[in-house]
Length: 125
Image (spheres, rainbow, N blue to C red):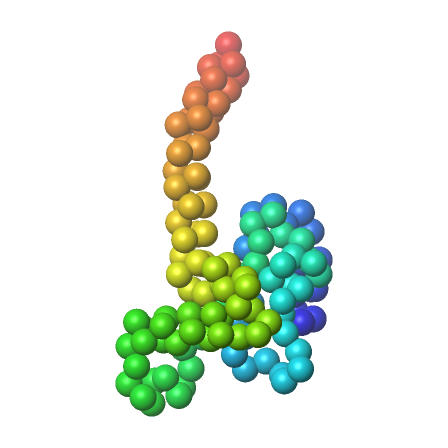
């Protein structure tokens, strides 16, 4: 995962970063991303989420998103390496994390507005 190391070097504080590891269903046999997902290789404050991408096989089968999400959940729940952390993997989990972050940011806006107003008053004096 050299690209992960490069991106980490570019954003060393990793305070606002969520790591998304894609295509976990097609990584080389005998390897896995468990230690990355658990934050043992690189630590990100917001953590990592593993996902299974909608692939060409799903498209050829005319699967809808709901089918792909069910297949993704089944993959994580039945995989010997990921089954115990399945509740921290998948597109729905990523959506939940992003939604929580968005809500936190929106709730911080009034406080930010107050700080900016106070700073403007201070500068105007």
